[in-house]
Length: 320
Ligand code: AMP
Ligand code: MG
Image 1 (tube, helix red, strand yellow):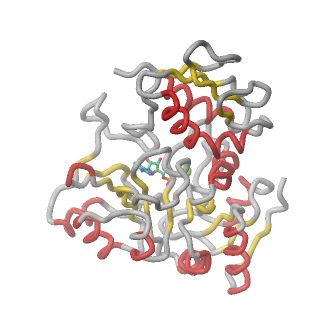
Image 2 (image 1 turned 180 degrees about the horizontal axis):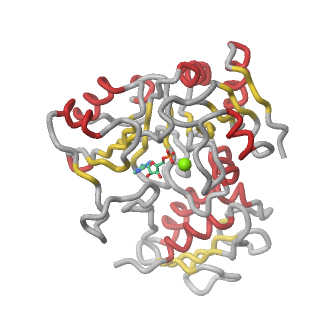
Image 3 (image 1 turned 180 degrees about the vertical axis):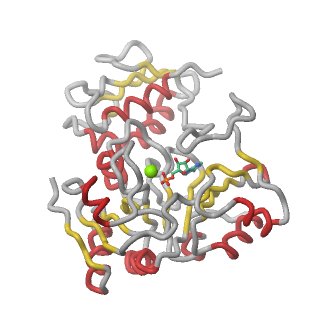
């Protein structure tokens, strides 16, 4: 339990919030869309705690908030269309999903292990001041417990997350009140991944072209809902769950009392396990090799265990 601090949006409050974020703490912050649950997108444990605080039953990739386009360009590459839209609509309620730069240092838990990163430059003056003072990429899903409505006031955040995060920076009421519009840039085109606060018609006028609704390959014609991503990071090796010992030829990933070749958490700490999950998936995959097999120790179905098991079940699902 944390004694959640309610910080006023003064120079002092913003400096305090930025200091907490640099230490890896969670600080909810105002933006023009909704309040974000902010944490340093480079720190694995911090990102794991974002999912823990929200109580989500799965992991989804998070949006990295940055103070300006130049800061965003340190983490992602901008194709020409993305550069054009960023120049026209940032700061504002527009999120761009772009190729992650090599060695960008973003926690793989923040991208769900994907090779793309969603970036946004928010317009809210308090968000911008916080981002400048913090100086890094700030992961920020909506600051509400999973399944509840997004918060548009500091009091809403307090009602949902008090005791679960270190602080809330109070910037008054949010203006837009709905999430950002999300665009992807696969295959040289532009795709609408989620409608939001910036109308797609405005984006089409700026580009002088129509923007396609992104559809999942499995269900053509059906728009993809947030979090319902087409491609998850899947290991090449075959994955078996609930293993207490390795069978011949398997790489065993332990947890708590089950010792393995690798471990998600020797002490059985679910936050540590979530923080390490995507690193371990890649490491185990590399050890097992293309035709290898990976076995995972049982993970309890409590707290972050739900999200970890959700991801492991996807990794173990048959692939075609
Ligand atoms: P929010 O809940 O507002 O933080 O938005 C997060 C959503 O952004 C996710 O659920 C995805 O739909 C989308 N998103 C974030 N990162 C990516 C990515 N790398 N690729 C595709 N969609 C993404
Ligand atoms: Mg939300």
